[in-house]
Image 1 (cartoon, rainbow, N blue to C red):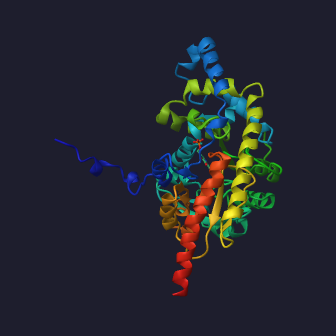
Image 2: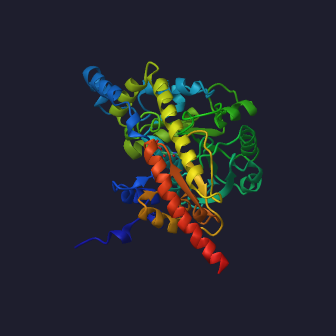
Image 3: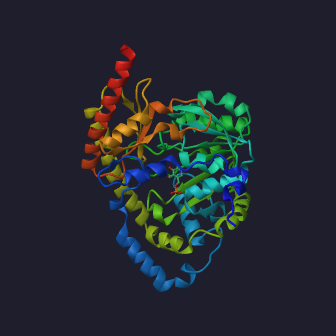
Length: 417
Ligand SMILES: Cc1ncc(COP(=O)(O)O)c(C=O)c1O
């Protein structure tokens, strides 16, 4: 007798959808397509030789550890390395404050597991990272969305949503995915103070912070929280949980990220992580440690900044050259993405189909808004500039401009009718 699986799915799976981006990536893998859709790092900057040496070193000298089960908290030397690394941005943490996760995507899932009861509200930016919505949706999150502009989340619009009592707020201060925007220093201060006033914890997701192509590093929320609110009580961090990852600086295939939180919260995360995967791959952690150590990671990040900074410039120049003047876009100071806005009435899903006919792809904006949020996602789309070679970026934007012009002509024809 065959089992009717669907009737047995748990309530929390109701309404779950596959990630729009993962589905799109399948289409956009056709070789003739220039894809600006994925958030993929450039394979040409993967430090392959260093990985080869690191794998050999781990197998030659530390195979007993590297191929064995490990601690759920993560490989101690890697946790210490993370603590040292974030200290340079003013984040004061010990290894006890660091949990190694299987990518920061797992950190988002563990946060959902730890904090969200069905119906709890999560305050998010509009637009926000699609993968966070996917992680939180499983736990039955509702959302309160706060708009953002070129300076990031509109802190002037925060009070009413905070007063409505969300469980926590989820914020991407640096080179936001998908907007490419950076939360200004002034707004960072305001946000931390408001969150404290209303007793709402902050999840600060920072996968891109190191990939800055111009300007100065801005203070992380976790640091402002301690400084502004005089929380300098040793290593017990305060109102902010901070996330980051090796995905954008070393390689996403490693699946290595980390959570920085007060030690007692880390203990709770560890209990949840044990049920999920026991621990993050020991081999990946030992290899990442070998690759990153002795200053290699810093040197490598310089290379990535140069390559991605140039690609950003190429994309911005091509947009300027090919796109009609009524189309606007953000000018990111770092990260992997920029965000395009079409005039009122445009429909990026139709544009997506037209773009595919021109053999170019992007992600339509709708995917980046919390369910039921009122938004104008149909006027926006996200472009990735890290993955393609400069000449592909230029050609892709030229092709995309043809689809955009076609869509705008149709729009004008409708409006004069
Ligand atoms: C904002 C943000 N958070 C988290 C992630 C997940 O990264 P990973 O799981 O590869 O560390 C991504 C990936 O693109 C992201 O853009």
